[in-house]
Image 1 (tube, rainbow, N blue to C red):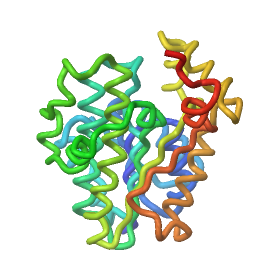
Image 2 (cartoon, rainbow, N blue to C red; image 1 turned 30 degrees about the vertical axis):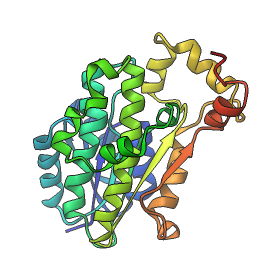
Image 3 (cartoon, rainbow, N blue to C red; image 1 turned 135 degrees about the vertical axis):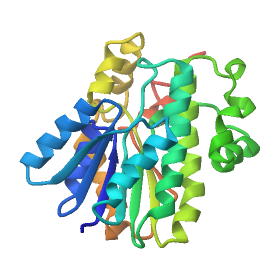
Length: 276
């Protein structure tokens, strides 16, 4: 039996983190498209890792539980890397809220029930959660603590209050950050930690969909006018995950680390600041 890593989302960021942290572990790779999980599993197995691909739909608690069950066949779950999700150009409002918001909440909840003492997790949100005007303290608390199965019924998430897919995505990522704070309290009772990483523009297939989508010029302008002057790489996100998931990050839990090349700073106080 081995310690087990659960990796959701068979993409570049998830794989970069798994390669950094998963040596010697059994890595269960879940993705809604089994072929994606199989492709990443193949690459990693050929590099000396021990992985198994599974089909996993983040919007389904049953599917999440099935993936956790697969992991438990191999040992105790000691790491979670949640890099699954859909972007504003990939899905309608309802799907974004069901996958990115509800699904992440359900995953953190279920893994938190079984995570090994000393275990650790990271979930990937987005700089987008930092772009909305501040919510009220009451709204933040609702996003953080509402029972997971009641989340999608919250008034602030109803169609009349969600402008478009980008707003839905921003709300989902804000919820991810608040949910991590609340779950960190519960994970702590098991001697485990959970944190969030909020990346900016990182070159991945998902980001390329955005570059080539309706908001392509917006995103290209964003990284041109951010202090770093470029998009990020998956390995730069893995650098932060390594800190958060290693003993060097032992005092960090319930936190969100923004890693966006300064794009959010520029949005508020620089050339990316909206003019209207």
